[in-house]
Length: 308
Figure 1 (tube, rainbow, N blue to C red):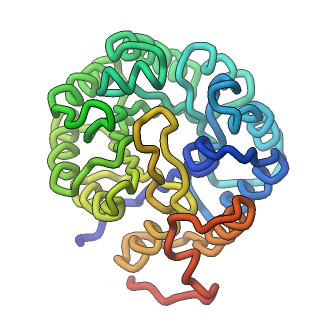
Figure 2 (cartoon, rainbow, N blue to C red):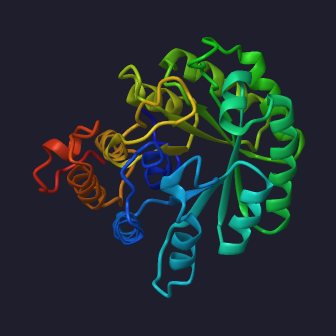
Figure 3 (tube, helix red, strand yellow):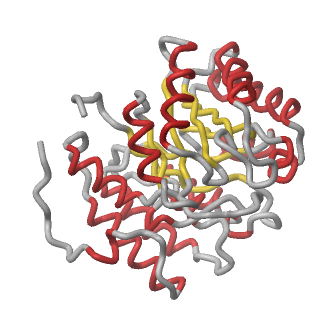
């Protein structure tokens, strides 16, 4: 692959990785894991989501986790992001210092109603207004199209549905746009084609991708996205996670496996992959089972030479 501009790593394990787990991770353990992720050199770390604790109990301490790190005097080179679904979540996020807001609209009516209780049209209207409000407050904002490559309930999702939502975002002045493969149904050819279409809509659009590894195509889809000009990559340590409101809540692309691929390709450096692996190993011990990631189970901790 030709030399590419800087890739941006967005670690979402503390939110998407944990949200479907029944065993609650104590706040002090979350803080320890996040400190390791900060030391890894990840560019963006998603600390949690602002959802009702009855719906997602694992995220009940998100406000406290943000306050801990936002008030910390320690130097860091990463941005802290948080997921919001509605105006109440945005209000909470503003109050505790979220630096980057992530919010999205599903291209699937069924998934949208299960995930947010709103139709696609209603969600698009509200999310767009919320995103503009966050931008006016000086926050970084990323908007996403969820179920962009298929839906566990509805099956195939037409490109036209995805493009309509993206055009609405662009028309509202929103330029950082993620396509999320919520149900893990994407394939590399589909990924490359859709991202190329998105990038053709506006010269200054910044594309991000979020893949789930339902059928073993996660890294192949990441590679296809990179080939098509995507530079923001969302992943979760140990390949944990999945959406609790889709039919198959399969794990995310594994952070350390993805980073290892990019490093061996010579398009990424300056990441302490062992810091992420340490979190994956601790998560394995905490949950008492093998997790989907590969590298954390096989790497012996020795530094490897990568191509330059």
